[in-house]
Image (tube, rainbow, N blue to C red):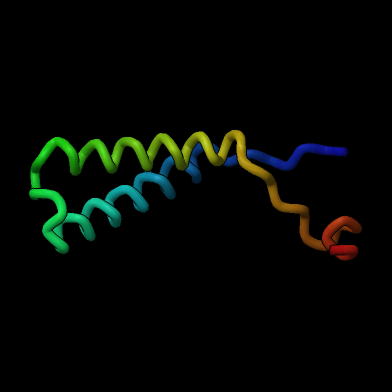
Length: 71
């Protein structure tokens, strides 16, 4: 069984964008204060989670492969 291709850069940027969006929502709903260190901790943690998920998470089956056709 072949392992799928990993995309760590894509995961990094996905985590970064998710972290920025969650931090923005937390500021808008007044859970965190803008410029507070906790806001940046949310961004950094979600960026790391995105990068790690892209390296260790499951991969998709290739389009048109037999495994994808059976599922």
